[in-house]
Image 1 (cartoon, rainbow, N blue to C red):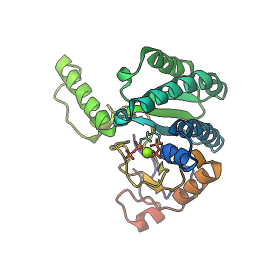
Image 2 (cartoon, rainbow, N blue to C red):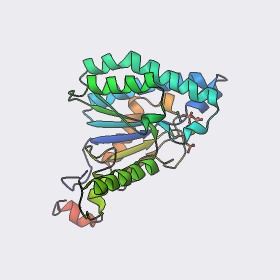
Image 3 (cartoon, helix red, strand yellow):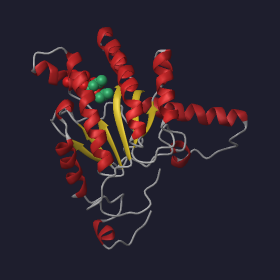
Image 4 (cartoon, rainbow, N blue to C red):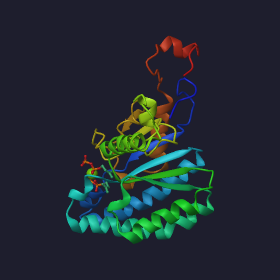
Length: 253
Ligand code: IPE
Ligand code: IPE
Ligand code: MG
C-alpha cells in the first residue's frame, strides 16, 4: 500500500474511495417509515454509486456495510440486515460480473450464516478476474479487528518458521491487513452528518482526505459523489512535505 507519486490531488480522480454509508435509519424515521425501508433505500443508493464510480474510472470502492459493533443493534434489525445482505448478493453478483466489476469482502466472516458465507465466496470467485472497478464490502469489519488479525497472522508465521526474527515495521503490518493488496484510500466519505471514523479503516486512513456530509446515505447520489470528488481535487496532499515541495513536483515517494 504505497502512493507511487507525490502530487497534488488536483484534477485527479481518487483511485480508491472508502465510504461509511450512514443515515439509513434517520432517512426512514424522517418519513415515518420503519428502519427496514431505510436500509432498502440504502441498497438502491449503493447501486447508483457503484455505477457512477465505474463510469468515473475509480479503481476501488470500499463500502462499510456492517461494523463489528453493529451486532449491538436490536436482533430484529441485525437479522433484517443479514437477510438484505444475502438477497442483495443473490440479485447483484451476475450484474456486477457482466459489468466487469470485481467483488471482495473484508471483515470477520466466520460470524455469518453458512449460506451467507457461501454466497460471499461465490461472489469473490465469480468476479475475481474482472478488471474494471473493485468493490470491497466491509462486513463484520472493525479497524481494531483488522490490526489484531494482522498481528495474529504475523505471530503464526513466526511460530511456523515462515518469518524469522522479523522487524515489526509499518510495511510488515500493512502487508498483513485485509487490504494488503489494495491502494490506500485517497478519499474517505461519511454520509449522515456524524464526524467520526466508527472503527472503519483505522490504519489505512492515515493520509486519506476526509469528507463529511450531512446527506443521508439513501439520498447520496451521483451529484453528491461528484461534489465529494470536486472537494478532493481542490486539496493539496502533502504527506509531511511542504506545500512548496509539492508544487515544484520535486519529491517522489
Ligand atoms: C447505516 O445506517 C447502515 C448500517 C449501519 C448498517 P444507520 O442504520 O446507522 O442509520 P442511522 O445512523 O440510524 O440513521
Ligand atoms: C458505521 O455506522 C457503520 C456502518 C455504516 C456500517 P454506525 O451508524 O454504526 O456508527 P455509529 O455507531 O453512529 O458511530
Ligand atoms: Mg448510523
